[in-house]
Length: 315
Image 1: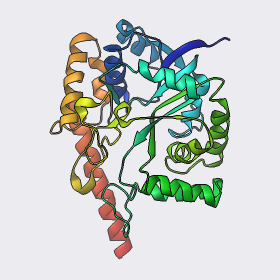
Image 2 (image 1 turned 90 degrees about the horizontal axis):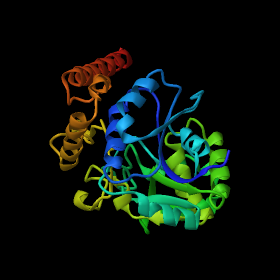
Image 3 (image 1 turned 30 degrees about the vertical axis):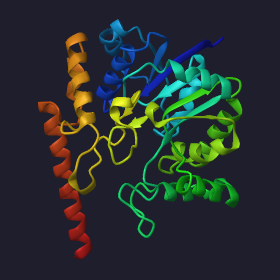
């Protein structure tokens, strides 16, 4: 079947992130009237979701999840896209502008990725002590898929050039982008089970192919420890740190932060516009009574599990 010329694609499986998806597509429609497709994993809730979001004029398509993980789904999104030129979006985004300007460079180069400025040693890491989330460690975790020269160049890009990418916003255009897509798909299969294999691979693989590196404003982290761009200048805000708690501080959708206030304001406006109250009960973050109970129950059970584990080791 012939593909349509261009459009945006989101993917979502399960209800855990459904409220993120709702805010993402709602905020997109405030700025963009073009084609949008939402990929769902044969979800039993599809019909209700379609009815509730009917005013947004979205297309829905189901796929078979199988043994795919969040990371390995990255290539499935482009494979299932009905568009020749696809902008693929994670579900935890909030749009403050139209993504339309990203289509032209995607078509010109075949591939579009977005720049990312995290600490390469981990959120609060340093050269002598790398921490969880270290970008350098993630490069090293896939060094068997690349030459030593490519790994060294990737390290230089991270440490000296500060070139890193986040795949929450990514563009692919056929046929120019197919060589990248085919190798990307093959290597993701070889690297199954490696944490964030899709992002680590993209970071190294873009050096082999023509691509457009969009500025951080098109995929701007919500949390200030990860970004350089002011949120007022961000075209797309990414709440990827949702639920991450370094030293007990919750990031992402946090009412106390500037980014969190933007998300909850949009969330409230969406509820006044669309019949989406049903979906709030699935949220695990504490912006509702149900969500608050689930959130703190999860924290409590996690603490109990850790203490039991420590007790067993000590004994």
